[in-house]
Length: 332
Image 1 (cartoon, one colour):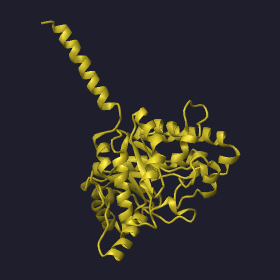
Image 2: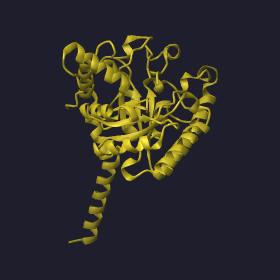
Image 3: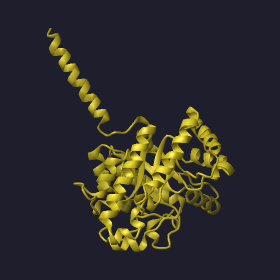
Image 4: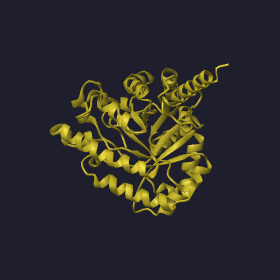
């Protein structure tokens, strides 16, 4: 028996298995997100006044990740107590922040990182944030129309600041992204803006804000393909809050049961993609209100099915960037 040859074959096999396991960059926890949900909590004071309701809602709707807004005026003990309770329910808490001016002012992400560094250093093991989730949306700035390349170049630098800070803290860094970023290029990069974001961040949530499974799957398909190519996880987000611009952006009118049916249909369409990392529902307040309305109408709660701020993705035609700017806006 050729021992050296056998060892070589084993080594090659082990390397192949390791490469295959890591080729899509998703951890076991992230893989479980396919059957779970995440949502945004823009009002962190709920941690003090309504933490029981929030955690009960998360448990009832298979929410495995909460993006909780950071407010420097809030007592860190409120965050610590909530994260400790969420950890006991196997719910991950991400530190949520961001604003359009983060793209032009590095001091804003730096202030966020300073707060987070101080918090993490004093928090107990079960009180620490599991990651960072940012929502920047630079296209809401006037510079998007008057000096887009300069704006994006500055945003690139600001993003590097954030990612370097996340790396120092040992935290995952994720970001929100509208579905139409595949129509724009990042200056100095080969690919589109969507590919740049997917590549730079540990995970991206695409705001595929439409109210039918067909449309959601359609506007998310390019980014899913990019995420597969780059080996990154991608969540698909939907909206539940009312939209003054166009009703096709949100499930507000259709209600919770229709939302659930459409998400299941989307899951059937895209669930085989190794990049698909589950759904994000924007946001906790709107989602909860939708379910309460359904309960009042039907006499029973309508929860999310896991079987198997109004956002930027309001373009009625994917190839019409100007329309997006007239309609875009976020309620936070």
